[in-house]
Amino acid sequence: MAFIRADDGAGRGRFAKLTARERDLIELIAQGRDNAQIAAVLGLSEKTVRNHITSIFAKLEVENRSQAIVRAREAGFGGG
Image 1 (tube, one colour):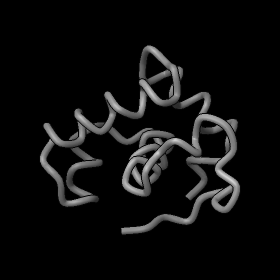
Image 2: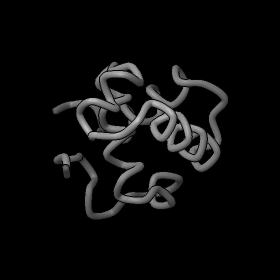
Image 3: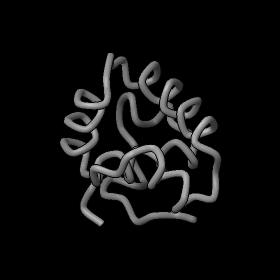
């Protein structure tokens, strides 16, 4: 499932490192969804969601979900 994202073409900075699936996850994270909700939307297990989130945090160089949400919203994620 592909989501419309702001800055989709450029993907500047750290967000350029994310895979398409990771960009789908960060969109949902920026919308305030929890892991169970993300798993249901994307048809994944919660364990797979956690693994993706670990990778996203490393690529965005953040330590927690709150920091990831702030960065994602600044980059235009979470609007839809």
